[in-house]
Length: 231
Image 1 (spheres, one colour):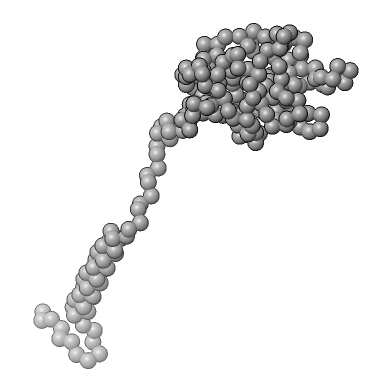
Image 2: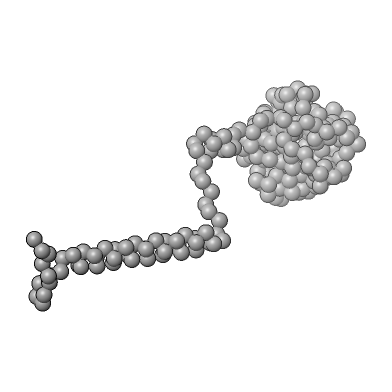
């Protein structure tokens, strides 16, 4: 059977199919070209890609864990002296004065009317050296709060920085803050020898006894050496 010859008013199925195929081929080629240009443009984009997310195991390993306690070795400079004490969480920044034992064997306190002065027992350990360094400060004076007014509010993990005259800053981390009645003060625990470098901050606490003109207790901060740096 001979193929039907098209004439006016009759559809041309074969030509129409060919025309559609050409259009589809041209469209596909154009789409491929545009996609290639897009990829080239993206490859020239100077912005860095976002870093890949870490898998859970890596994330856990990268997360900070508890800091090991007492890993900083003490220094041994017997002739060094502390010159400044700073407690960032309390806003304290105070100079030092030297303290000695009185004739009764009791450690003298810093001058009673200076609100921003701390005292270091110079017959004991230099802060940062091996042993317990003893630092005293008033909680108040007759007229105003003093340098250790907020000492009892320190919490475990707080830091104390002590600058020394040998250009070393010793950083201590608080282990505990405790209150002891003055007639039941644990001398050996506070002043006794230690195997590492430690710090004791001491001030008055408890109730104020107006009859004796003194507080009934002492606040003691126990801290350990956690860092040394040159200044």
